[in-house]
Image 1 (cartoon, helix red, strand yellow):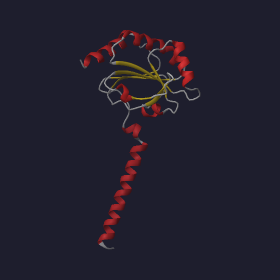
Image 2: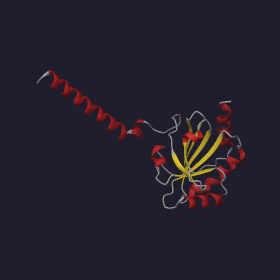
Image 3: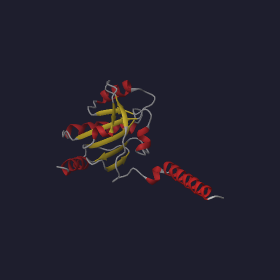
Image 4: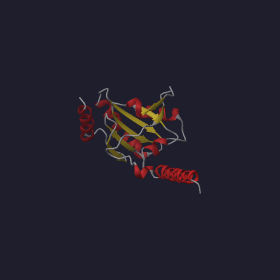
Length: 182
């Protein structure tokens, strides 16, 4: 075997190993990079349901305290907690605070989700991700699932199941995050 053939063999082996490593990282990304308290909030893409059909991403909320809720119109517990999000939205009027509810409905469209939100009297941002990409990116394990994200993009609270988001503890958390960067 010539020196050139030996080097080609070494390069081929290194490329195969790098490919295997890359594939392993891709397959095990949830275990290697979990979405948890203290981690950076992943980006997301979802469409508005207000009729404008705009695509919103996490970048649209950068620098703000965000309460990100993943829900569905068919989810009973999701509907139970929606009024508390609205109360929180009305209580905390700081422009640096946003509530974003991303519906993962795939059987109904934006019109149905909009009508549903209107029926509940929701005045905060309601988006639709019918492809469920937010489920994968945020490693959602149940509905509803909510993430409280600080201005710097770190997840400060992760909650699976319904909660009273207008409770004194959640109000204090949001107000504390709003005041932390001032």
